[in-house]
Length: 398
View 1 (cartoon, rainbow, N blue to C red):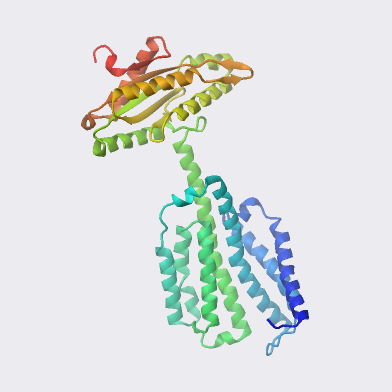
View 2 (tube, rainbow, N blue to C red):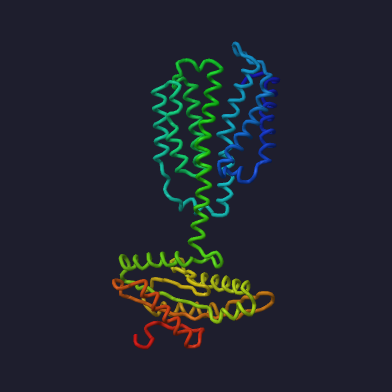
């Protein structure tokens, strides 16, 4: 920039002072605060950025700028406001980006490709509000984008919102520097320039706080959905989730896949109470986990598998014919029979009884009737000696 070497060294020292203090303060943050998780994280971010900006301003103020009428305090607050604004819009992108890439390593790029379509309406409204502020001018114009920023914060996750804030901040700063946003020439004074920079910095804190709160809320909702949808022990579908998804599958078969039928397999571990009474409930839980994992591996993605009772499971599938269903049931029976479960050097031999019902007539398929019939077939399998498959149509009187 054609500055003297001494000035370049001083500027570098000011930058490094801000980075060093910011890094030292950042190291004291908790994990949740680093990931912009909750409103306290935004307050912590503000404190870190303020400390870093203050350190940079203290070192940089000593450079003798040729600013008309400037004082050490004026140079300090000008430098501070500039650094604070940059830190507040850049660091959230770094924090959120680090977490996003970390999650991406575990989920894979396929999760990005399969993501839902991006809602562009909030960004369009934000761009329109910036244009309106530019055309209107005046000190109050800076507040025009606030509703659109809040809409963005309520819509987007943390990383996209941080990028929106960064782009918005750079755009507004550029518009002001170019003289397109009219402050009636008052922005020529240092005081108004500082006021504008600080105002813009604190303006972006609001949407970041909302985004952090929404991030916490989304995490809580995800945990709630996880606990409702999946059984905490076996990690298969819970009873309610199994019933809902099975009902949806039957509705889909009835309306769009009338060439297929629906089958329900009701499974019950044989003599599971003896395992609990002999080896304890922790051993029984381990047996349930081993069996459910083995059954899950034997099923396809479209086949719905859930835990409907203590040691009772159910499977709902769409199938072309009954032989396919019976073949699957026998495969599952053999799979459970071959499960190796060793607890405290004790090998457990487990078997399963399976009741099967299959209906081809799509128009007359009734989910509740299928459940009742599958349960009756399961009872017959228990009566027949366990470790076997019984289909409902073979029962007496049917």
